[in-house]
Length: 80
Image 1 (cartoon, rainbow, N blue to C red):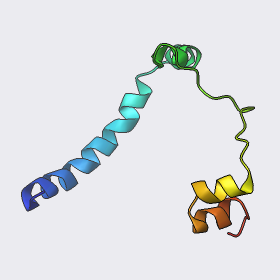
Image 2 (image 1 turned 135 degrees about the vertical axis):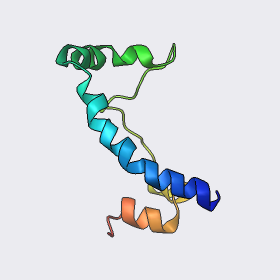
Image 3 (image 1 turned 90 degrees about the vertical axis):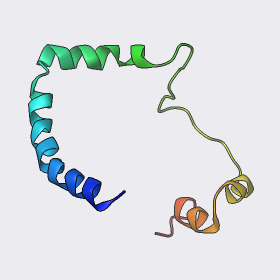
Image 4 (image 1 turned 135 degrees about the horizontal axis):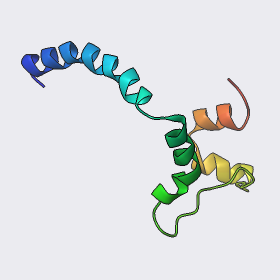
């Protein structure tokens, strides 16, 4: 990225951020409700999203192999 494209990007940012509310306001409550109801139609055929009741059953040794030592300490031993 050169200076000119960086400068143009920085100058365009306020314009893009200013348009965000206008784009969001163009959806009616009925549109939003339809999107909430039909979101699964956007998924590929045969795909089923995970549900909250899905669990991952792994032993502590399997978790140690899967995670870095730091991640294991934080995620499994709650050492934050």
